[in-house]
Length: 270
Image (cartoon, rainbow, N blue to C red; front, side, top):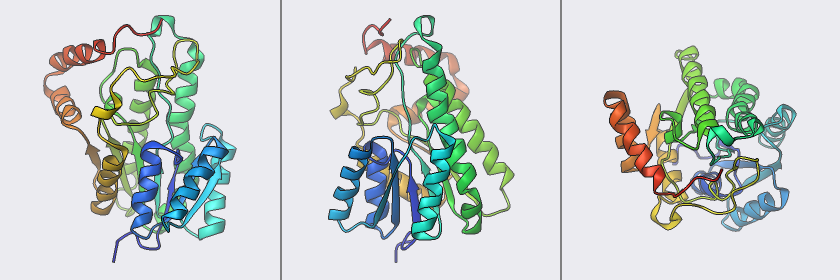
């Protein structure tokens, strides 16, 4: 029997990409799923697709940047399923612009979604997670441990999220709570199309070849196994693993490689 059978998994940003892939992966193993997202139409389309695959799923429309929406997401999950065993903080937004030209509201938006969204959902789900020795998962990025040029706000939000989750783990070291940080590396998803540029508008296209990246389904497999094994951190892709470990010992070298990698995207929008 699957370890997740009949357990409740709440996934923010569950209408596409890694979130949707996690909903299918955990649901396929018998988990009872709740997915959230800002766009009601996209969210319900994802839910119907999951139901067609015989996955039990609840969809709750809401914006993790709004504390009251996070409270409602948690309460609706509890009203429907009666418990929460796994919280996957996946909802996020990226950016692509040099800080010199950046509207500061872009950084505020990134912090509200990527950092405070994780804080709010974790806060209101925590008592349930502690009750059932559950798991809190944060979907971070290479930018969560390595600053990336043109991603100042994104890096700041992911660094903050990782610091929060690391502290949460230590505070609950004897409680049975499992806290896991996931650093996917470049993954095929819509996050780059929706990334914000200097004025706060969506980029609209990806500067990278999405087909050459790890698929969202592969990432979901790693997340599922990480929760099953109660890992503290999951770093994905060979490029991501190399940068993670070398950043601790050869930070100057990694900085140079990061700059070369980002330069392949061409000129960043001003």
